[in-house]
Amino acid sequence: MSILEVKDLSIAFNQYTTGLKQETIKVISNLSVALEEGEILAVVGASGSGKSLLAHAILGILPNNANVSGTIAYNGEALTAKRQSALRGTEIALIPQSVNYLDPLMRVGKQVRTSAREGDAVVSQRAVFERFHLQPDVERMFPFQLSGGMARRTLLSTAIVSGAKVIIADEPTPGLDPAVMREALSNFREFADQGCAVMLITHDIESALTIADKIAVFYAGTTVEIAPVEDFTGNGEALRHPYSKALWRALPQNDFIPIPGSQPRPDHLPPGCLFAPRCPLATHTCDQAQPEMRNLRDGVVRCIHAT
Amino acid sequence: MHKQFGARIGIFLLMKGVRMLTLLFAICLISFLLIKNSPIDPIQAYIGADMMKVGPEQREKIAAYWGLDQPVMVQFFNWGSALLSGDLGTSMIFRRPVSEIIGERFLNSLALMLTAWVLSGVIGFAMGVVSAMKKDTWIDRIIKWYCYTLASTPTFWMGLLMLIVFAVWLGRFPIGLGVPAGVLAGDVTIADRLQHLFLPAMTLSIVGVANVALHTRQKLIDVLASDYVLFARARGERGFMLFWRHGLRNVALPAITLQFAAFSELFGGAVLAEQVFSYPGLGQATVEAGLRGDVPLLLGLVLCSTLFVFIGNLLADLIYFIVDPRTREGRSL
Image (cartoon, rainbow over all chains, first blue to last red; front, side, top):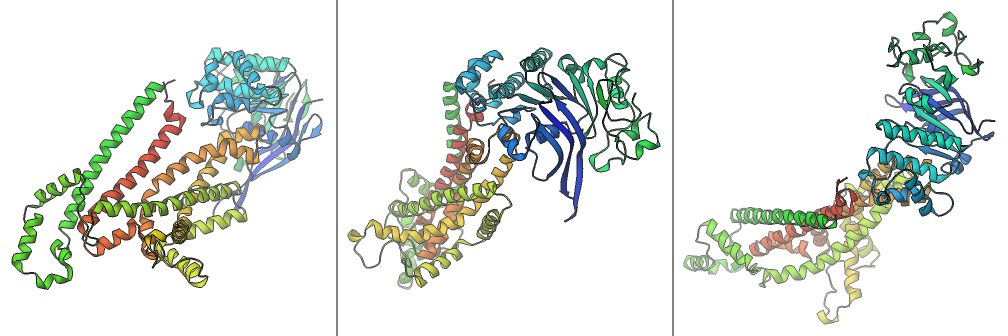
């Protein structure tokens, strides 16, 4: 059984446009994804494909004007708002994007200690700092005094001291030099090997491939494919969805060929398959309705033409 | 690091000191010239109603005695050098040294302004915090409405309102003055003074909360929408704990700074409130000196209020400089 299962998740925002006219903008539609214990799931996709919103939806920290439908289950039980607020920071931890997520006026050691849930907070904070090669004087620093790598490791520490079973890392790698990045990624692998489930949200497919078990490809607020990491190889023949193939081929180390067009904006979504306007395989049927996710060769895909 | 910090504080204070001296010099010169060119005739102001009995020769003698026949810059120099030796001159209305009057009035005003300052700061901050934490609820709307109304309320009008309600209708508080009339100075009790202080202080506090409340509200709303509060919520913090850990310290600093910087408005408000309540403070003395052409007292008050406002701003800067870790610990890493 999956430790965390997201099914048919849709998120829409109510926005006032001109005057009192209200408009609903659907940013995530029918998204389904599952996390297993001991496994790293990398969520990849272009910016604006709804990756961070998924993380916020799982934690229940979306803004008030968000309408959420669909189900999120943790350990087989529905994740209600009440359960979310009980599990935040204890069972499910977030590793945010940047140093801006640390309180600018609080010493970082203290911020890590407030995340600790059991045992002596000071002891566990010092232990985790030592593990991440952060000098003892770092705990007395303020966030503005940290370098990029130190900030990243501090953010990572908050998740570790909490002892959470599910870790959601939101773009943890940009701006890191290769050595620090490898170290950060290996930490995630270590987590997973200890039995945690890790969701790694990133647009860096290349580094995600080095540690992930499965890759979920996002496009315009939905999952188009979830594939085992081994399928990302060669010319992408093993991949199922035309967008995943195109994404794979667009990488510099592969063909470096982008496909024409761009991801549709949330307020101008196509009626049928979201990728149809750019898809080489698109037929008349694709414009009728959004395809359902279906199992295919040990993966899942949202395409009627995929084989 | 600490030694470096000490040096930086030293340089900071030195620069501020230089700025204060130049400011004071400019204020002295400008107000001296303004008064020189105003229609106030110092001799007439001095003699008052007996003007008819004084002949032209006597007037010239008085002018020569005071050095009024000398060029303007020489007069300024004479006044300036007397000032530097601590002599502010003698008040024409009170017939006593200016420094003595200012000292006495300042204590009265200080009691009034300090009370109003602390009350408006604390109440305004609390109102802003409640309003932001309960944003868009009925309590937020009431506080906002109250603040907008007050922000556009003149102090003297509010003072009159307080007088009508509490002094006239309810008869609970005295109608004016700093001490009861017809009581020997030795017999005036602290309770008497407090009773006379109450209404003007309340007036100033009620009007003063709007600024700090609205500012705190907006700042806290920004803080609550920030990434670090989002992350704190993601770690399970909520409600009062969230505010205590992350909201308070990020909002208190700008609020304190604002409150110190509001010294000038406080002084301006006190002038009007004191006039309405006939409270014997600096503000009332300023109005008197202006209306009756008491040049030495007026100049002394101008200097005094400049100093007062400057110190308020200096404290605001200094607190920010010392308390904020971003300036305190430097960007040395």
